[in-house]
Image (tube, rainbow, N blue to C red; front, side, top):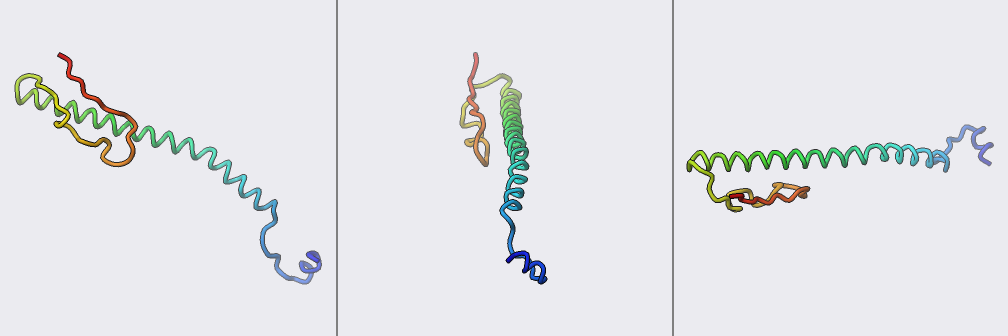
Length: 99
């Protein structure tokens, strides 16, 4: 019997079902707070990367204007082939020349 083993000084082996369930519940509560926060962080990071890329595109357009004295035809080949350089994209960036 378990009582006799405890009384004889033998160590108890393993965890009870209740102990395992409590640990699983604690992990679930932590995950419930951590996962949405992580997802929000990922979206904000991708948004910041996109803003930096848009600023780089604007700088390239302005430098071409400075060099040529006017705005010239914008070609897709003038800009990075893949955005973002790594990872999955969050936004599609399409360039449209307005005359």
